[in-house]
Length: 309
Image (tube, rainbow, N blue to C red; front, top):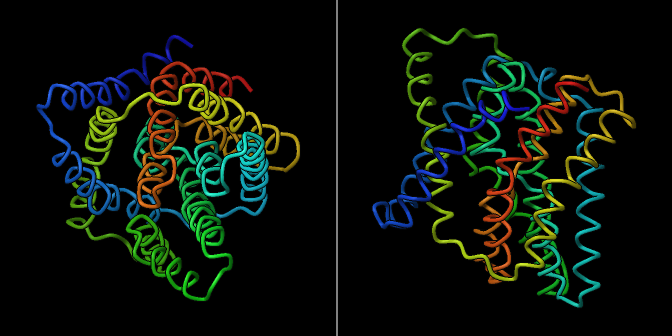
């Protein structure tokens, strides 16, 4: 446990450095926004393309894996949604809280950290988790909020979702990489070095950006935020572990990576969506802050557990 904690500490130290820079105004919010864009559109996309280009579809997509993660995440999503409705909040608010309970920071934190801690073989399972989060759950929140507000689902919403997915650089990078892999084309030496150089900026850039963005977050609505942090850091990985290890025949290593990915703190893009729709952004902000701070201890514990499972 201690050895794993020490291995994860540099990742959280980078987040802490970004947080400190943001709090001291040495790195203002506008700088955080542009750094996030650089990581999102360039550095992380280069890393994802390179990972996908060296994998096959079979190494990323496994039906048992997908069913295990989807079923467990759906169960936690439904629980968080029901708890929110029991408190008599609106359907849009309930969908945002449910999103907090199942969407982890897989892109900015999970991809660089888990592939470094668990080895290159973790890339395939992590990319599968990221794909499900982006395609299924990021679309679901848009559908639920729009349907609740308009009273129906129109073809226009489906078109908007499709265009949004096609414009997402992480999805584009992974699909392009898999297409390159399917064609069995070797990456030319200069291209490989270019992707390595650009992708290497993803880890420090993403972690610093996470910390800097947390500097502007507030810890309001603490009881709800604590519940959502518990759902994300404890219930979600527990449900995923049960589904992966006991309900579906998932490869043990891939199942372990899936559980570790499920143990990641609430993703920053949930806050972006909440702010975009004007639905409970302070609640999401507090959930991100609390879950990220707590994950300094919970992520090493989960990785230690799956290592001995």
